[in-house]
Length: 231
Length: 380
Image 1: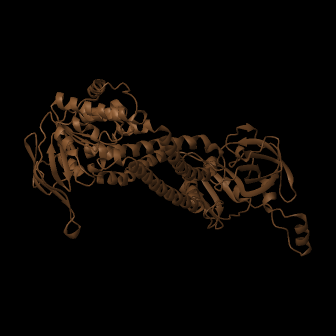
Image 2: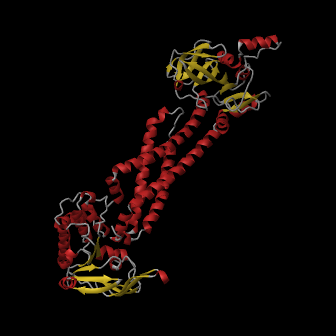
Image 3: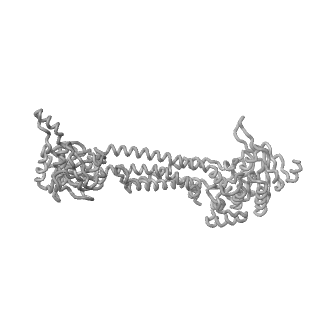
């Protein structure tokens, strides 16, 4: 994305959530996004996820122009379904579907036949060493639920994965396990993974760490540089 | 994947209780419909059972059920001799209140001539009247038993139950009863002894006890009802009402207000059901806001969301309808009035429930469509 700005409201109540953002995330890259609350991380995630319309700038996904002062595609829903995977802080699994059904539903929405979707969902959960395939989200631990959420996010092999503080509700060991999974996805599926996080214990796991402040990108560093700066 | 069914499956108890609530509400609507139909059937059961081609009543009267009709007893003989008349029977009608077995019993009593038109239809137990006095046939809904004695009239004469019918009640819902014409006339027109003595002391004759309320006429096969009615109307003090007209007067004058009342009540209940179903669907939708936002975010089209809500409304409506119908089928026998559930009414109600569910889900659909996908990304 280039020159992306987003503001809400007008006149004295205008809030500039994003100011002149230039950001590129490559396929297979795991990028961390950090910054204080209200700095614009979530808005940036919403813009990349084609959920919030920016006010200015340009955005491309897979080199396809998506936004240039206006949405260039009418079917943003389809774009999200096929190209973007979302992982949430509180897994956001559908509570009335089992682990398998949650993953299969994402595939069925993309036109996969129910039987095939179910088989692929079970295989995907197995890939993540998830055994409780028929359990409901309320019956799963936080770590297990997050694995299901990650499986759902990659169900349609998206090119971009956006994760909003996926390790926040997890202890350190489970947080590391989640980052392991995201790294695997980035490397093996060649997905561009952007993770919003406050968790300093995982900063070193990213290929690149983007720091935001007051709606702007303050710095883009490799983790080693960032840790040195913090020290 | 059927999301609505899976949501129901996951929340079985909640759904079952909600469906039970809607079912009870719809059960009341079904019961009111049944009472509405039952009132008409009850009202028409007697005139239909009597199978008269013509009702001969007092001039300008709409018949014994709609207003008073008093004609001389010899009218029956006059009518019987007319050409084309196969049979004629004199009848009286009145409501009586008695105590039997320590409990109050209210009966709609018909007096008739044994062997002539006007007697009770098929008996389910006992036998017809064989004695001239003090025998009575009652409908089983009166709860009276064969052999039970019912004291009636100013002298509290003991009437013994000798026969039972089923499903014969008046337009007011009182069980039917039959006695001989003589007994009925005595019960209707006889005055208590002190009053009779007072009338005689005052130089007045006691009231006649030989009048009747109507003559039931059955015509020969092929005889014209209209011609017979016209012929009878030549007697200036009489009017002849065809059976269909008598039924129509009953429906029009006697039970119309009650049916209107029931109709109004049904309308209100249906409206209340619609509001409650709409609120339930809206609440169910509100409970799923985050799930709906998530579905939208991961790319679910609006039709998936809309179908989730509409289908759940339809499942709730169908379950409630089935529960309501099942409940009323189980308890309808305990209602004091006949509850007659007609397939036609059930079909109409099913369509009404369908429309209510569709309309009720509109509020939920509207709320769901306004949810932004970004809400799924809003903090946990």
